[in-house]
Length: 114
Image 1 (cartoon, one colour):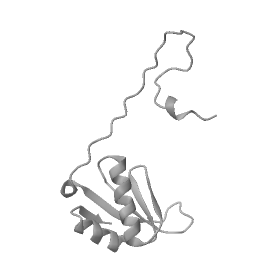
Image 2: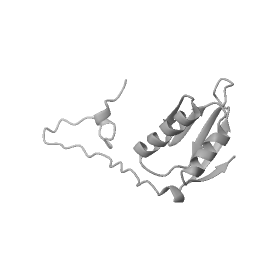
Image 3: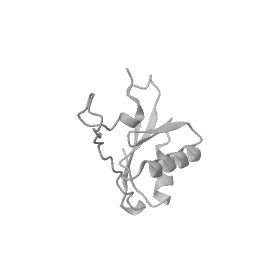
Image 4: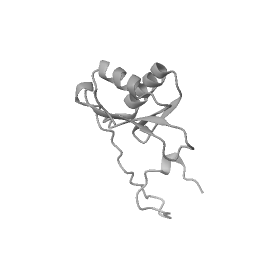
C-alpha cells in the first residue's frame, strides 16, 4: 500500500469524519547551502552492498537538494561515469577519488580523501 506524495508529511492522522477538519503538515525546511569554502566534504571508496562493484561517495554536503544535484551532475560529467544523488550523498560509479578531490578543491571546497 503506497502513500500519495501530497499526504506524505501528514502528522498523526489516519482518518477523520469531521468535514471541517484541516490536516496539519510537517514543515520540512531545507537548510541554506553553505559557501563552498565552508563545506567540508569527504571523498571515499565504498564496496559494501554493491554486488562487488566499487563506487566513490562524496558526503558531508550541507545545503539544498538542488545544489547537491548540480554538484553531482558536474562530478559525473567530469568523471565520465554514471551515478546518482541519494540521501545527501553523491554516488559516482567507479574509483574516481583523485579526480573528484582535485575537482572539488579547484571549486573551493575543503576535501578529505578517506
